[in-house]
Image (tube, rainbow, N blue to C red):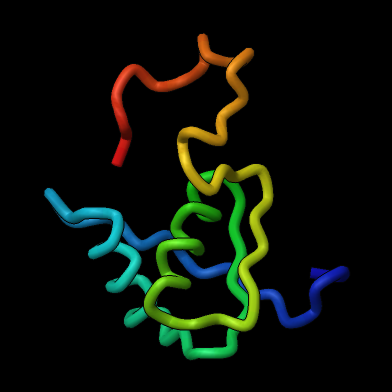
Length: 88
């Protein structure tokens, strides 16, 4: 928080059964009251969620830390670490 004084880390919102990533992102944006112009960010899955939230909120920016924008971006040489099937 010292480097980012306005940083807010929201509590974990449990996904509902059979909820898609898009539905989860919309619900998260509504419950967290994310408004257009916000700066979104996240690490790992939080970054993927921030990108999905950005589709409907229109943020000023999205900051990804240790996240991939899509599974195809995973380096080929790290193929043994790829999931066997899509996780979303």
